[in-house]
Image: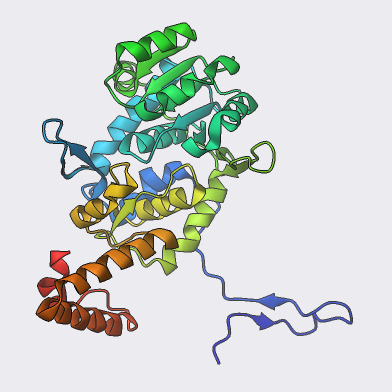
Length: 365
């Protein structure tokens, strides 16, 4: 029988069971930080910095249809991080350890904010829609944050509570298209409004040297939804985040050619740990369009090899595929059932691809 832990001889007493030890494997080292993960560790799997790193899809305004994924590499991304971090320091006057809020769905700009904050040892505090009108101002006041990076979709929600939060002085919108209504709302609440692009341009003109975090520095505060009282903030250091990610380095078996579809909220630690693992292994992160109803379209376009999800969504995907195969009937259903059985058979031996059935059936998905 395979054992995962072993009793240590002589440790059992009349009132306590024996101490058990397991063969815990981890690549975690005490010098790890999120900053080093991007700037140093990624280079081990992506030495030229030319692998795809972050990807997103733009929607054609004339047709309303999303296009193909556009990508940036590590070499593209690092100058953007330098500029955004410099803008945070020069324009927003943030000091080491400052709290930086981010209120948006998963997107490329979210990652710019996260890694720019890490470059200057700022502490990132994510907000999310389901927090509600009571929890959001509580978190803003509890952290006394002065700046919130905000998606256009979340802007009105933020403006609806910002009058309760005297510490908030600046809102940086992730998108470039600030309209007149947003400008007037910011003026009404005496909040400075600018775009991330403007902050990046400021940083390009006023470069500030990196001030990297220590492993013991606070990387993020992740708040609960507050369903049982005020939200509780989990304070996680860079070492905490990297230790969690290091546990996944081996069992995920991720490779530089892997692609992760990011749709689980970055406001939750799980998605950020997964992304940390992807970055470490030189792989790619493709963001969803921001609408779960279009996730199947994102899946078909991106064809991810890494897709952390939740049972409810996986059941929906299973049902949709099964119903589609059943509706096709005849030879098409037979082909699908045969291909599915073959893939399932080989999967137990660790084979995720099948040269014949992937080409004949699953390339059509």
